[in-house]
Image (cartoon, rainbow, N blue to C red; front, side):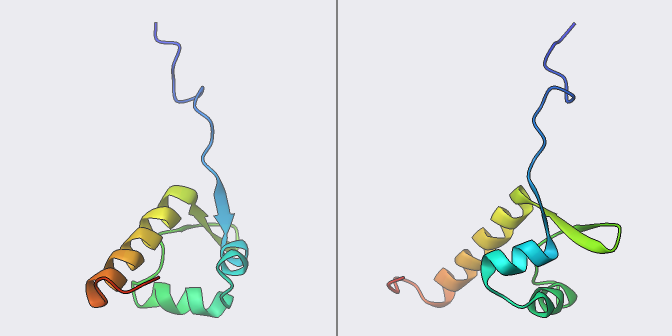
Length: 77
């Protein structure tokens, strides 16, 4: 029997919408607007608030960086 089951794996960090907005120094409404235009991070709802997996946030930020780099190649950051 394999002792490395999904129950043994550590849980991934989950961030609320309000915490993500504070971390990014954005208004909560900005994240809602981005999501309504399908440009925000993938999330899910638990109770009344959206939640985001850390991995989904990292993917989303990577996509934003790639789009920015394509628009402004070689620009100093």
